[in-house]
Image (cartoon, rainbow, N blue to C red; front, side):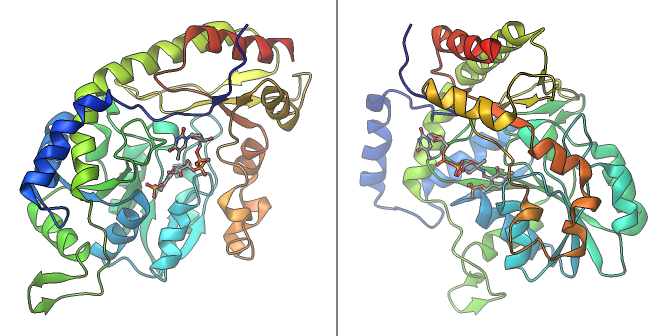
Length: 369
Ligand code: T4K
C-alpha cells in the first residue's frame, strides 16, 4: 500500500500551459494591479458563477474582513464565535472592536442563535457568524435577532464558496459576506478574498477603502488599506473557475467515500451536513468520542505516523489564545460546547487530487484505531 504523505489539503492546480495565455495577456496589458482587466473580468465571472449581485475582490480574506467591518462603520462590541480560524476575531481587534464570544450549536458547530440575545449590550453593533466548514449558519434566526436589535450581520464565509441553500447562494444573507481564496480553499487565487455586497453604493465604498481610501487623485475619505488583488491572482482565479465544477464534483465523491467507509466505527462521529442544497465539501471534520479506543490527539498522531497529516481545525479555540483569554466572554464556562468540540475535532484530508487508494488507507487507519 502506498504511504506517500497526504496533507489536509492541496491546492487545485490546472495544467500550467493553460495559464500561459493569461500571463501573455498581462504582459501585453502592462497593468499588473489596481483594478486591471483581469480583476474586472474575475469580479464579473464570480458574480455570475455564485449568483450574487456585487463582489469586491481582495488580496486575502483577512483584509476583506477588516474592510467589511470598516465599510459598515462597525464599532463597540461584535458578537462572534470562538470556533473559527483566528482571523475572524483578529479582524475585530484590528478595528478596535471588542469581540464578544457566544457558544456554538453542538450539531452544526456554528454560532448558536439562542446564545446571542443574552450577549447584546448597548455597545453591540453587529454579529459576525462563520459558516464553519461551509455549513450554513441558522441565517433566519440570526437575521431576526439583528432586525429586532438593529444590528449589522457580517458573515465570515471564508469556507462557503459555492454553497447554496433553498433560496440560492448562501452568500446573499446578512449585510456582507466575506470569502477567502487562500491556497487551501475550495477556490483559490494563491492568496485572495472577496466581499459580497448587496448594492453598488456599498461596493463603491469598499473599493475606495481597499485602495487606501482614495476616491480620486486628490481625495481620501477614510484610513483605507491596500487590499487590492493583483492581476496575476485574478488571472489564476479566471482559470480556476473553468475547473471549479470538476473540483467540486471530486470533493463530493471523496466525502461520500469517507462517509461510507467510516460508517459504524464506534466513537467516530462524522459531522453532519445540513441546510445546503449545494455543498462544497471544503473540509471533512469528524469528532473523536470517548468510546473510540484513542483520544483525538492520539488518532491525530497515529495518522501522522502513517504519513497522513490531518488538522485539528479549530483547536485551540480563538477564545483560548492569550489576546482573548482574559475577556469575560472567553471564559470556558461561557463556551462549554465549543471547548468540548475543539478537544474532539479532527479534519481528514480532502482535495480533488486525493485518490481512492489514499482515502481507503486513511479509513483503514481510523478503523484500526
Ligand atoms: N476566516 C476563516 C473562517 C478562515 O478559515 C480563514 C482562513 C480566514 C478567515 C482568513 O482568510 P485568509 O486571510 O487566509 O484568506 C490555513 C490558511 O492559511 C487559512 O487561509 C485558513 N483560513 C485556515 C483554516 O487554514 P494553516 O496554517 O492551517 O495552513 P497551512 O499552511 O498549514 O496549510 C495546510 C496544509 O495545506 C499544509 O499542510 C499543506 C497544504 N498546502 C498549504 C499551502 C499554503 C499546500 O499543499 N500548498 C500550499 O500552498 O492555515
